Length: 364
Image (cartoon, rainbow, N blue to C red; front, top):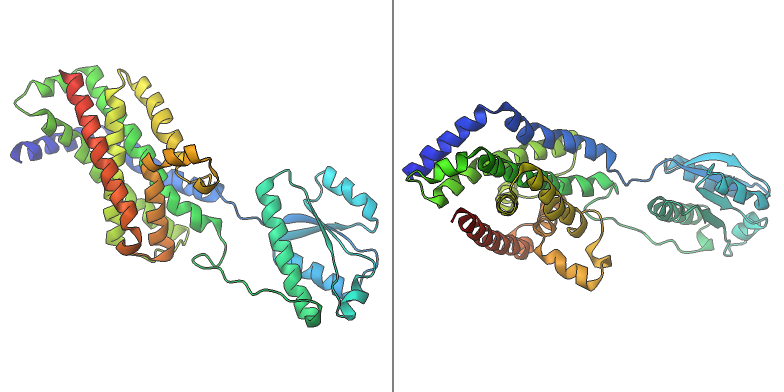
């Protein structure tokens, strides 16, 4: 233990003398979280809306006012001729068109079912789907308010994210993604740099055991990774107002397990690389891209083919996303997350065994 502590002291002294490395470890995660928190926004607001109302009525105007007042839609114009609606959509002047039939008011006053037509430009699938859902719900509720006998409107309740804010879903996931970028890439680069300069071999000819050298190299990045977790959580909760409903100690404990996976993955990449350029390319292809594609951060795992779904079970970020979103938004604890925690523990042990074996094999 005295050797380990002495070696750690040496590593922290070396990090302190390398301000560029400290900058890369601490500042970029915060900057990336702020930028992605604003840029990666799936909320649909201010969708251009054109209305075709051949015989305007008080009820039709009320429905249009409700759509505009929701802030989901911006009224860009009225078109009295239904045959010219296509031109609005084709030119991109409107994304959604609302077409009222001539007998709309009469049907509403008689208490019978009245249909309106919603035309949606699906050039951007997510916007079109969400806009169609919003418009349908607003119209149903408005019709129920104006003519209760015209139909039945279901009452909707949204759990965990009542504001339907995509940032509440995305930003907790960014915690895991940014930790992967920081710890995996920089760990791989730092160890390969030691090999390139020959300092790693100099350490290995000392009385220190290889395991002690390896531990001394990884622990500083682990501690700095926990500091990054603290900074990112503060930005998420204080800047973006994402609620943290669960246990903070549990969050850091699970982050520790995930950081172990990221560091061991960085070590494994370093054993497969001879230069820093190779390590950077390897980290991009073997860590960052699989994490983004297969973790469920962008694409739902349930919609993937069965073979691809099977590959996601070896992606640590898949489990950490479930954990961090559960702690942030649901406030759940160990009983709800123990299987994800167990998966992270198994993966970190497997990665530790394989990366250590590769490291020793490379030495000898």
